[in-house]
Amino acid sequence: MSIARELITWGDALSSILAKIDELLESPKITSAQATNVQTIADSVGAVMRGIWEAVRTNDYDRLVSSVERLREEIVAAGATLEHLLNRQSSG
Image (cartoon, rainbow, N blue to C red):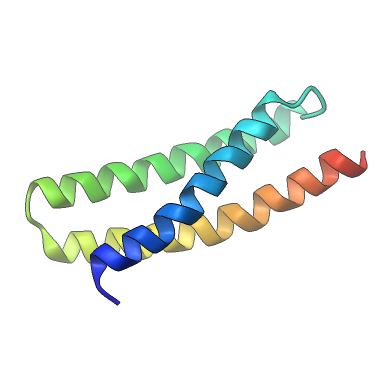
């Protein structure tokens, strides 16, 4: 898959992740530990996105490829963690 196509694919998933982060951080039921966990996820995704922008800015194709792969990994992991936390919020 091309880098552009992969970014578009994961960009859609990223908007879902960001919505879940907002939902959890605005929840009155979230514990301090959970909020820290959610903020760590947001920070990690943000760092990867900054790496992608820097790779594009400097025309560093190898870094771009590795950053997009890392973004995919972060989104998959974040999705699972956030979904688990949302399920706990709705059942608690």
